[in-house]
Image 1 (cartoon, rainbow, N blue to C red):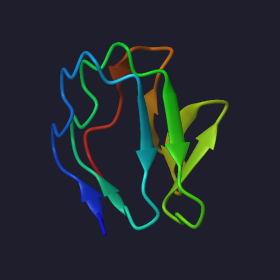
Image 2: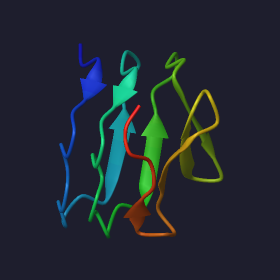
Image 3: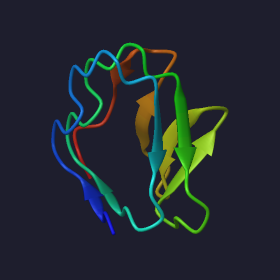
Image 4: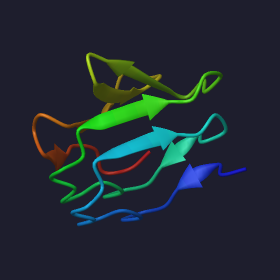
Length: 79
């Protein structure tokens, strides 16, 4: 029943290579994936109405870039 991923929740987690955004997550905090240089695969649970993947890049439904695994850096400052 996770509804948010807090600020810096996975920051600098160098072993994180994939993550699934649960269905009920509506908020991803500032710096949640900062420094996750091995994060290459993001999945969004079916039914999540708050986030979308476009060619592996994570955006919120407002079109704001959240995380681009090819850039190896987090983009947004929080939503």
